[in-house]
Image (cartoon, rainbow over all chains, first blue to last red; front, side, top):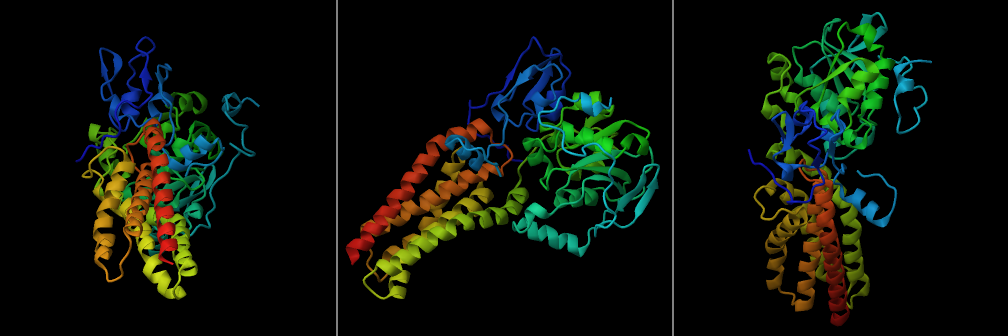
Length: 89
Length: 373
């Protein structure tokens, strides 16, 4: 199976090692296996594959993960650039 | 009132009637009976899809009536579930609901349909309609506590974008278990003791999935592209020095073909050839597909009997590349691996270039038309 890779070094994903409790929920919900749990802490081993869906942040009970989540939708971004409140797709 | 609902910190005001008892109607054409439960008659559905279901799927794949292809939210019984049967959570897009019940052939379970306004699980989760609040409300509205003895929900993994498992537990008492990404993996997931293999947690984007998206992409592109084509045809017809139809065909047809080639490049070639087209940015991939289409469709016109000026011939290339790059870029919205900030970055570069190319191409073509009169 082809593994797709999008642009490098663009995503806003961060993971605070001090707050992380190593529960592993981020590794469960991530559809691109960005996280693995090593030494009872979540590690962003494939950060460039992150698609900023925000599932990890939403399901992190410790609030250790931040990401500017959103749909990468052209119309939504045009609305944003024009400063219009509008639907995405 | 001291329900869990009042304790939930809402981003928005609670919708009217949220959480008050409500079962889906039995009068929906895919409902094939009902199940008596302590809370009332729960509509029953089967795994077999009817001809009318499949016709509906074909319709929405072509972007016809997609917004209204819904099932009523609430609790459904698939086959003959009992108080121990699993509860699966899904969206009220009928295509999603149908594919879910079809995938569960031979299983009995409860299906809790959230009101996602007819949008699929992943997109609705991104918008927040497939989310913690709606899930907690829907559990309450369906009196799920009285229908099943256990307190477990199987939520699609891609729904995690909108659902916070720990909050659902806190406000409803139900624990969320994330099922596989793809519903086709559900039987294997159940056989495996409700465990998803690592591969079931990955969202891939195989050829088959990219292929089924093409009709919707084409229909949406035509909505934008047809007015542009009309502009070229009519401008050529009205402003030429020869007869309306002669001018329309000789000078109006090539830029129209350029727009069409751009649409085909961006909405058919880009999705199909996605992994093999060089580059990472979709606008780049789209432009390369546009170039290929240009070589196939428009270059042959260079040797036509009609002698086009080099200005006019060049205008077609600009138009074709601008259009295909734009629709290639638009495919990021349907893809499964592009990020918000990635798309934003490529748009900041791509959008001005596409706009410039379309403007330059159009001005060149109008100038050539004016010079030829």
